Length: 186
Length: 186
DNA sequence: TCACCCATGTAAAGTGTTACATGATTAG
DNA sequence: CTAATCATGTAACACTTTACATGGGTGA
Image (cartoon, rainbow over all chains, first blue to last red; front, side, top):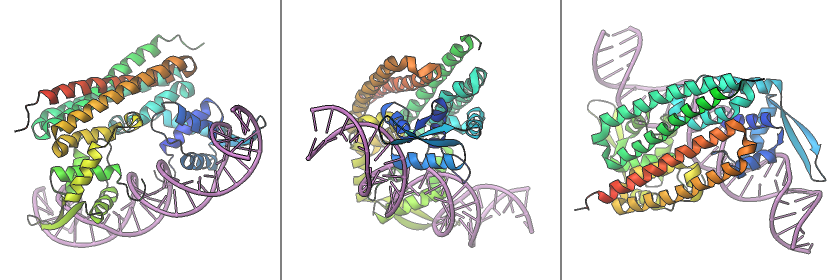
């Protein structure tokens, strides 16, 4: 991540804060208690990430005296933060995203509907499905060419990956149906 | 990663060097050209990682004057390196490995047969299958309890994960069959 | 000669991990 | 009174990313 990009954890926090203004502690609990894949629940990651978001003016903190408890610093997303979030959510899906950054794509999907609306979500899913098809074909091609050299375990490991991506493909097709049959916005 | 542990990239390199003595450049090409998931092909990651392995005595480099080309430093695994690799490969599978470190588990599987043999591979697959079942059940439980609160996109994102893990489960069962029907070692 | 591939590496900067520090409140 | 939970943070360290540096060989 270079100087003016935001790390994935930053976007995860930004998206959650957009859904509901939260304190660092609230956000930590989400990572601890729910199966939100692979984000650190350690304060050493979350608090610095939140400070970076605040320094860039993407969130704004206000100290709230909780119900007799210690002070809570509740973070709210700013207009600039919402703009940044939307830009990230609606950016293009590149080839290698499907192979190497699937978790990022699923994170984007999880926030898309709430922040950018139904149309953007459907568009995302269709692009996702298309890239997945290409990627699965690539993997199958690779498997066919290198089947001999790989040995049994290498072959099976690759097949494991292919099956996983095929499952995502079925899911994407299902998700598109769900969204297309959803009644239009009021 | 604390002071005396080896990062995942280190194990990936160690396993590949065990399969076939290689130079840093050879290893880089593997990450660039094959769908070996998510490992950096950048020299800034690979060369320092190789130096660390060499400092710990897990691999040994010897400079080979290539066919008229520039010198190549070919790395070979040492007995200590093989011991370290085997220990990593045959270590237990913890609960959160399935959820958060699936790529590490698949990397282990890919090396297991060659470095620790068929019996260890079958044992690994059975443990993997068992942990996966527990994890899928956990996710389904979470989905049932929180379905309301999640909203449609959150629900779908979670379902995507569940489908992926179910695909791995089917794969594991398939892989166990393949290994059990494999003729016994000479 | 110019560009590209082979081949190895370093430097700066950013991020995450682990462990620690601090302090208030509530339940037993 | 003691432990657990709420709540926020810092410091040291290791790793990855990005970009750069170096130098020989090969094909147009």
